[in-house]
Image 1 (tube, rainbow, N blue to C red):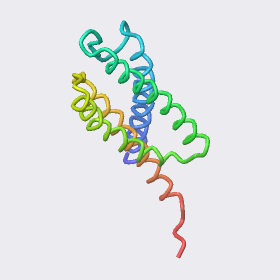
Image 2 (cartoon, helix red, strand yellow; image 1 turned 90 degrees about the horizontal axis):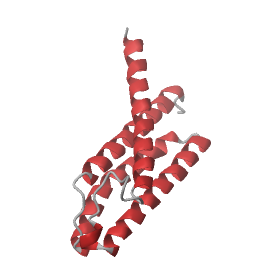
Image 3 (cartoon, helix red, strand yellow; image 1 turned 90 degrees about the vertical axis):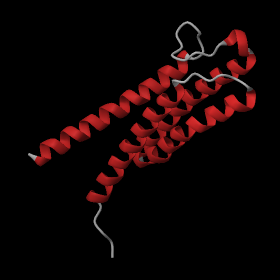
Image 4 (cartoon, rainbow, N blue to C red; image 1 turned 45 degrees about the vertical axis):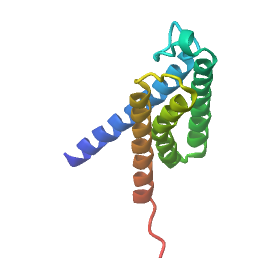
Length: 139
């Protein structure tokens, strides 16, 4: 019974991770088009500073694709742990960006980065735990 629960939990964590990657990449890509963006950028009021934030989001999506490719090709899934912490730290970075540049930042950004960041940390931690269980102790 415990094995079934653990397998189910692992499946939920894995599916959730892939959904978070999809949301991050698609959401970042959609930031370029005002018609499809999940976030409000208020271009009329903030102009170029708002467009800079759009480009930052696009670069974040591209970076996510590169990091995912690297981690899966090298079988170093635990590298998603620091990536997740970086995404969580983006909450403060986005707020700081808004403060410094006098740009109103959409209040959905913190939830977006918190969800994707926690998903990455949990998925990477699951891989780390699995690796430690499968690797014998060398003493």
